[in-house]
Image (cartoon, rainbow, N blue to C red; front, top):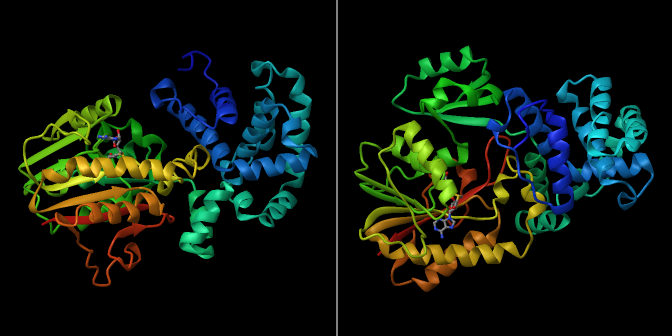
Length: 436
Ligand SMILES: C[S@@+](CC[C@H](N)C(=O)[O-])C[C@H]1O[C@@H](n2cnc3c(N)ncnc32)[C@H](O)[C@@H]1O
């Protein structure tokens, strides 16, 4: 946690990014580590922006300096990346301020002697920005859009060149926040409270709003009192898809921090009599408990391993929102680009199949098992379902979603729910399996 005094969000970003540069692992500071919410906003933007645009910024740096990256001090690389991220046109930071603030970080990183180098190259970036960006557009998609080569190649193979290019571009957009309104609250009252707190630029959606400038939203009475949930449209759509299923008793086995759980409870409160949520992570369960209190949920919860659930009941609906690579959520979590390996997907698949095996006997005959991931990878999606059905052919069958032409682009030909990331939605996969 950064010291509460003299917090400099740029310096904290530089320190965290240096660790990331060496390890590919980022530990974001928490919102409550910052006294001033706008400092957190700047910190989070800077770290995410550098991670999101890694290959592109490194391409600029090699071109500007005429040096290979391994011949440049990591502190200079990180400061150059931070400087470039502040010079992005949408940042509206004065150029001299972006350069001076960035150069000023070097003494605090014990690299004061690099001030001249960073200063000269950031000024050179300002002069050459147009040429550099045009030249980057001529590079391979992995450089242009800052993704690992292997990730681009596997999406090209699976989804084709055009879709892979779209995914890469959408992944780099700055994510918007989507909120769903708690039906117990008056929509207009929530709207007024948000506006009163300077939350601007809200676009009306069926169940809530798209918030284009979300910085103030986490500091509102509406959030504290559980008036809304941050919920991506692909999750909101999924909750609508389960409308026709029986839901008197529902078990959510990978539930924390509770986004789908609470949204499901809001949407179907008049049908649900028993709602149980488990998760094997104590820390994530703490977040679920906090959210449950805020939202006033009646769900019953326990920390438990879904592979060996100690539950003596049968349910109409069991939801498995499985742990996965999260490659559908790169827009929100750009670090996923750099901390995943191709070998992860089969490791995850084994884990996902073990969870499904753990809960398959908790579904009532005729009831449903809903398998969900936010992965774009076939190993974690179709292959898991195929293998589960092969292993349980006597007990389960796949129920394709009937689309009737509605939301056609959200379904595969096999009847799976499959959203690819776009301007407004994260990637998501879901399959509906029925117990015989
Ligand atoms: C994709 S997240 C769930 C998100 C949640 N459903 C929501 O909408 O907010 C996957 C969750 O699975 C949990 N998990 C991983 N392995 C598990 C296991 N063996 N048993 C129960 N939960 C598990 C993780 O702790 C994580 O919270």
